[in-house]
Length: 175
Image 1 (cartoon, rainbow, N blue to C red):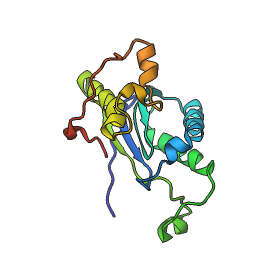
Image 2: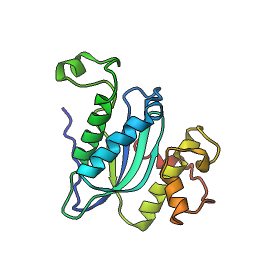
Image 3: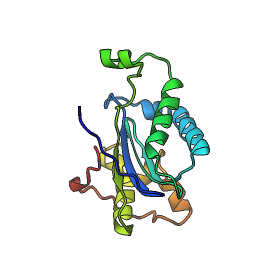
């Protein structure tokens, strides 16, 4: 069995990619209100700052900063996934292993994380988040994708509405 090692940094800033098990699914946008409820409920009980997020049909990219004295991003993702899964009817295909473990067949078991190292690294990952719907040919302009904190950041003056989309394939962060 693989030995997954995660880095934990007190109050750290992280980039995440979280995938549905079925990569052809549109579940996250079909059930966006249920996902948002699961996210908000988790954030209320276990606070963290959402620096950037984009929700695509079958995966999520997010940048979080945890509070000082806290390193447990894994628990937060586990809760978001669990709350969202429990809000849906139990109709998905499951493997024998998932059935044996009492797991749903909605999410991939793991997620990908990257500790943000500096301001340049942060900016690259924010651009990647916001450009991802264009990369996947879901829209032509990042402003056209409704499931993104891009709109929040532009309205607050924290992100330029004319920012270029970065489609550099060397930035396939966890996909």
